[in-house]
Amino acid sequence: MATEDIGSDYVRIFDTTLRDGEQSPGATMNVAEKIAIARQLERLNVDVVEAGFAASSEGDFESVRKVAQALTTPVVLSLARTRELDVDRALAAVDKARNPGIHIFIATSDIHLKYKLQMNREEVLTAAVWAVARAARHLSHIEFSCEDASRSDWDYMVSLLREVVAAGATVINLPDTTGHAIPEEYGRMFSYIRERVPGAERVRWSAHCHNDLGMAVANSLAAVKNGVRQVECTINGIGERAGNTSMEEVVMALRTRKDLFGIESRVNTRQIYPASRLLCQVIGWPLPPNKPIVGDNAFAHEAGIHQDGVLKHKLTYEIMKPEDVGIPSNKLVLGKHSGRHAFVDRLNHLGVDTAAIDVNKAFAEFKALCDKKKVVYDDDLLALVTEESRRAGDYYELAGLSVSSSNGAPPRAEIVLRVGGQERRGAAVGDGMVDACYKAIYQLAGVQPVLERYAVKAITGGTDALGEVSCLVRQGGLTVPGQGAHSDIVMASALALVNALNRLRLGMRNNPQPIDEEGP
Ligand code: KIV
Ligand code: ZN
Image (tube, rainbow, N blue to C red):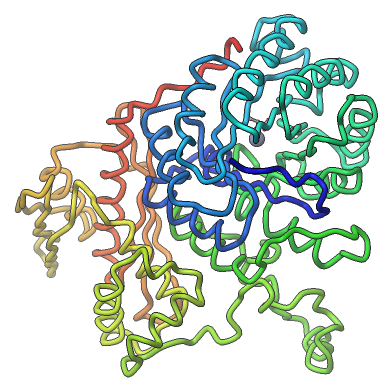
């Protein structure tokens, strides 16, 4: 069981990419992808991983369980409402974790009590204490959150938290659920409440901010200034609506301005860039080029006067070093003469867990890519391995594709699709080659979803670049993304659709119910 070392002074990083992050529309991940992200979080050396919301669906329960089993160092926890079923499912999902934890929450603002929970303050207090006490019989790491804390009455939170701490909570989180707070006020809330809750010095205080007004990082830092020693965040700042506090921004702000904060996190910052790239590959979201820390332009100096200064001395315009966040100084990596050792070495440098992939297969694919492409970049390599792990254990598998198009005749696609291990062959014509492929795949899979979005992006420069396709498909009230990467754009498109169909099938099987928030 995890022991709390409340005494040592550093800022714990609580990563919620797999829970709050996954709540971003279109950021759904399958179990294999969640494990890949979780392993990268462990390499980053984050302190706590929120693996999901075990009671929300069978699929979420399974993925929390698998992530809990896959990790060694961080605390792994599941979110839970104050209901008996939630608490018990969360406890069961993490019971194999080396360092298990639970995160119980209930709203405390009058707005939520009146319109969402339809409970009075006393009832909310009773539910919170009951849930914490139940979990405390099994675990020592119990986080409790006052949802919508930044719009809650401070004195009410003091009276509730007094009981919750006495019942066994070891971490108290005061979230800015709606992204409504301003730094000075958010920081002051922590000081006010910490001064008044008996035993406040024995628990860890946590900040959890949303970015609706673009204040999530600033609010989290204001909380740190007011004694908070845990920040909840996500890779690339993904999350509900405008997102959560960005892990890389808060970690690098603490590090770069240690003169001001006097405290840091324990994150291995060189794993930041690989984490960011991995997440982009998994969920298929491109980053804006000006995204702090990890965007393409974050360290690019365009103006002549800046370039001149940087050439004379980097400190003139650079407050951080790109290599400190893991941005490779030499993005040009390998060629057709590179050996297996160099290949594995480069993957390790990029943060890929080579023990978790079929290296021989990946190396063979790399060699095939070298035959097509003169120059293979880090991003090509990452796309190639992500594509490999993305397909592992899939129900639908693309086993063959051939397309033809000529003047006068409509484009035609012939597809071989493995469905649950059985090979099916079919052909279709369409308005273009991608359209023909998609029609043939729908026929063979026996599904007819609506294609809501389709986008192509070249991962690296040149006409021989690896292309990345992302799509969004909808069927029966479920919308899922799909990604595919290949040097042939039609092939990448087909892989993206097949990836989406696998997610759709998983989603349908798990039959996720919308989480009903009415009640404790
Ligand atoms: O934003 C929020 O309030 C949350 C809680 C569940 C902690 O995500
Ligand atoms: Zn949140």
